[in-house]
Length: 140
Image (tube, one colour):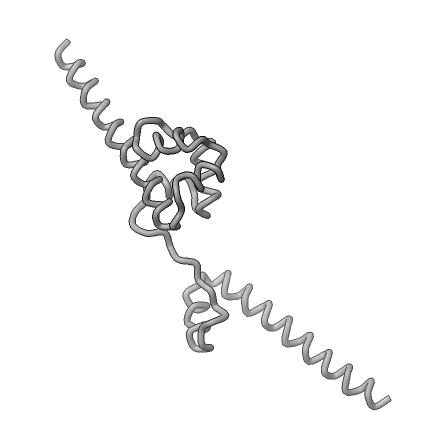
């Protein structure tokens, strides 16, 4: 009987550690985004007190709440549960040099690179046809 009591205590400790880890992850994500608890609570349709208890590990977040948080933070439930470090920063390519833009494109999977280059080829072809059309219509 003692074995099962010890096992139950151990399982409860593991659950508490994972539960607190989730609460810590939720708080960390909010802080990384620079949001206040009341802003997040409002955005996901919770009262501030309810949300505060989730962040402090006093209340469990439902799957529905985790879905709303994932949508708010542009991530997945799995990434919230298993958060490691900071969220990846959004990459904007417009303000980069041409060399930097090409480097970023080269980091993509082969399929994604082919899509990008296909779009570029289509746009260049359209431009050539447009230029040709404008040049030849101007002559008429």
